[in-house]
Amino acid sequence: MTEFESAVLTAINGLQEQMQEMKSDIKGINNRLDKVDTRLDKIENRLDKVENRLDSIESDVTVMKTDITSMKSDITTMQSDIEDIKENTAITRTAANYNGEKIEELATELQKANIIA
Image (cartoon, rainbow, N blue to C red; front, side):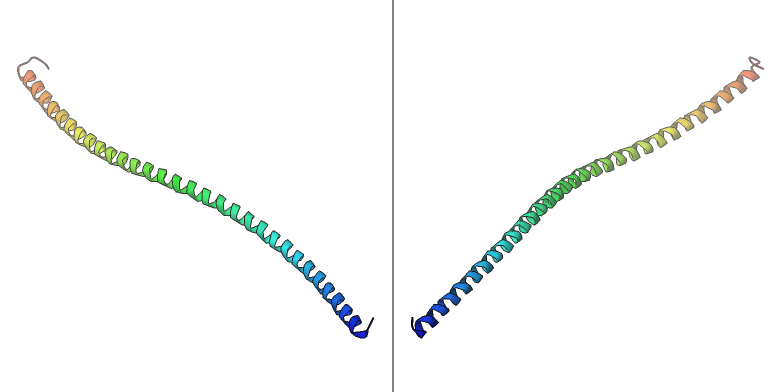
């Protein structure tokens, strides 16, 4: 084998070694990419869970808004009922006072007529 052939063979062997190293590096990169892909899948799953929880919270808030609106309506109705009760109580007091005055007048008249003592 000539010196040239020997140099070419050495160069080829060197290239083969570099190619083996590059294959090893590429496998390492692929493994790292697989790990990154797995991590991204986990993150995507967690984000899906967060999205579902947010949808659930949004639905709960909508129900709560409806409940609050209903409660406001109930409170308004109760306030109206309280005003009606106040008015009716005032009317009843007026009527009771009026009846009390009339009873006193009747008692006075009965005493005058010597029907009661």
